[in-house]
Length: 307
Image (cartoon, rainbow, N blue to C red; front, side, top):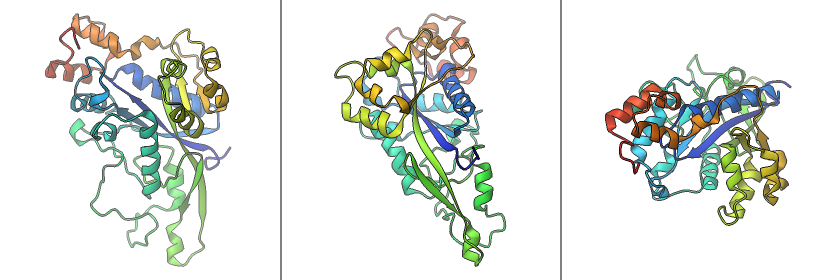
């Protein structure tokens, strides 16, 4: 498949991230590697979306802290970004509404710019305007360095620090060469882009718990968007999916990461990292990156047994 015929993917992970662990970042990396190896996908970005403070989970620290820790955790990544939209709402948002927000955001704008992270306080996020009056990609301009559609297509897989035009999941969107405004032949390039929910097998299992999820939301999450599952050790994802009629119905929209990397998925556990912090366990470095540990200690987070 050519670059333009492959499906371009943005991976979205929702969760408490209380705190964000090395395992959370590894999930993004493993999912991207797996999707690339299929030959059918190009992952152009990852989004970390921490849950709202009113989620009500015991020991959940303020979203102000969780956003900063997430930004510190991805500061060396050129493709994973933190989005605060969910935290900034008036109340808790469902996973379905978060996915729909990002889909609608992609529909509304002609481009989104995500610059490299320098410091947590300066981290740009999707939806945060980088200029007061952004210029549409299709508008004529005398700026010599203005990117052409071909240039953008060549760079879109590298990172989201480039401008990209997007539409809803599973639909196609069009890059228009700005030379069309200069009287030359108009060219169009179509790329399919999807927003996929990234999760662990524990979330997949939660879909099977009666009454926990709204069935209409499940239909949208799995049927309209699709999910990428990074299974925990010894998890039987096929058996899990067989326990839910909706998961069986949309089985083709569920991609389970299968690789040869022996990552102990326990490092994803925020609970274990909090316990290690409370007990002064040196193994906390197995769970959390050093910048996140430094911030936690400086802010005196997760010190009490209740957190």
